[in-house]
Each structure stands twice: as C-alpha cells, then as structure tokens.
Image (cartoon, rainbow over all chains, first blue to last red; front, side, top):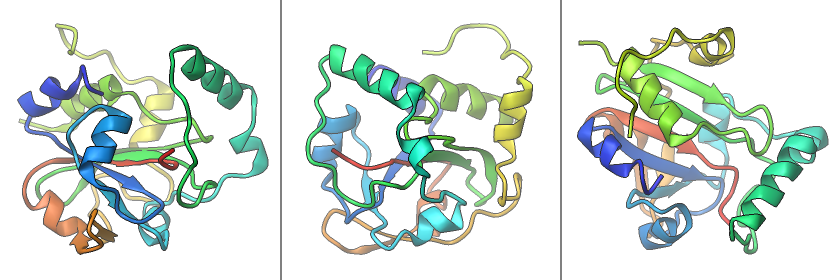
Length: 130
Length: 62
C-alpha cells in the first residue's frame, strides 16, 4: 500500500480502513499498513453486516491459503501482534463514488482474501466513468 | 503504479466481485457509523461526500 499510495492520490481516490474494533489512531495504521489514511472502528460490527461481511467459518480462517499467506508474511518479516476486535470477521473492500454509489466491491472468501492495492486501482480505473 | 494500456476485460471471477452478494452494485452504499481514533462518530456518508472512497474492511489489526 505504501508504494501504491501516490497512485491513489493521483486518482483523488481516498482510502479509509475499517477495523472490527474501536477506532485506531492513524499513526498506528500508518505503521501497520504503511499508508497515511484513517482507520475507523466498527466495534459493533454493524458496518461489516451492512456490507455483507460476515463471520468466517473455521475452514475460512484456517486453510491452506491462509496458512501459506501467513508463512509468506512471516518470511517477509511481518510479525503479528495481539489481534484486536472480532477475529472472525472476513475482510472486504468497496469503491464508493462521490454520489454514494457502490461502484465495485470484493467480499473476502477467507481470512486473507483481500484485494491488493493494484486491484483496487485497476477496478477504479474500470468503473469510475468519464 | 499502474501498468500502461487499457485494463484487461474482467475475468468471470472479477465480474462476480463487481456485484457482491447482498449489495446492489451501482446502488447506494448503506449508511454506516464508525468511530475515529478518539472514539468520535464518523458517518460513511460524510466520507464519500468529500470524494471517491476506497473503503477497506480489515479482518483485524494485529
């Protein structure tokens, strides 16, 4: 995300992260995700529910895909600290235009299924219109 | 950074992602209330009213 940040700014596409916990100071997100955008809290899970992001089953939290991604992240030097919030929530991402319309969305099929920054940018280029 | 040229046609999988189950693609985003880092309420409508938004739901921080 850090490397892609200029491309988001170039497109005037703002980013807000949502955590299934209380709001997190932006500085902490900058450290965790590598970009200067706000991380908002949704401790009740109402927003996750509103966007159709449910709780994962055991097979969605622990499978070959999630384990391999975990190993890959570990080998790249990422270390998981104590998780906060509802750990069973599945990830997702949505592109919303300035009129409040959802233009694109992705709902995670398992715990690590979230679109890369490049996917978000390509999707926005496809759907943003003139 | 994006590669140059036109974006490829979306795959069947990508097309499915474009219309998430339970959410009307091209339809209005549901209203949602969040908390900022100080616990103050933030409405989703107030975020997109300032311009296009990528709303990224994390599994958790940690």
